[in-house]
Length: 238
Image 1 (cartoon, rainbow, N blue to C red):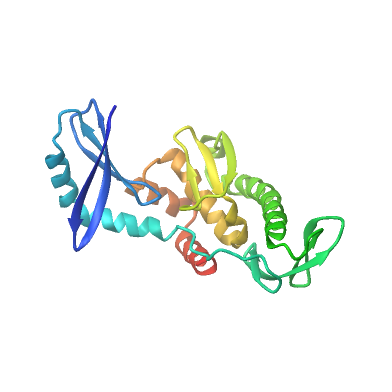
Image 2: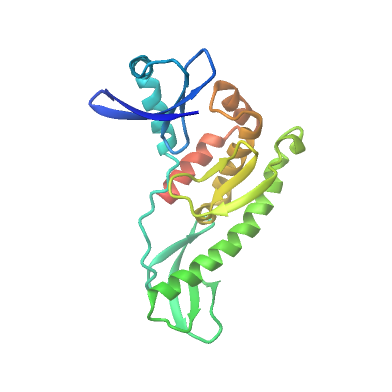
């Protein structure tokens, strides 16, 4: 299986795509969750024919890319300095750094209190906060996964074989072809209301891998208010 790259112009914008050649008779266009475009093409299809197919579907491709780009985290980088605000489960906490021999983080009356052996070093503060987020995200995501499985008539049919928490740059979550769920660690900053949306969205992908109409019919059934949950995620995390 070979991989090639192509590009077309549509409405003054470029659409770049990757071509995967396979033993098949038809050509299929897929827009991935990171907004990249992949073409599954027959072995003998010319690049000109592939590009023409993309050009004919360009409007749909741009709509799909716009849909996925809404999920990409956009919060600017934090500097980890006192007074800066940080989110946890949808609520804002003001960062307070104190000197201490027992490094750690706790929430106290609207503050994210960081005890650090080097309170003037923002890199140390960053590492302590990220470690705390990582520990909290593992606990919360496992709990919410179990809660959201119950939305489905047969929870075990959509149960992922594993849950991985990572720092992702371009998405809030994904479901691998092998049914491993990956969640962005930054999702712990969002309200539970919206965390549940992302988890349920990914669980739907166990039954419906692509974003075809059947996927959205399933999502509508198990989480009828998913669009408001999605909007809340975008508002809080933008």
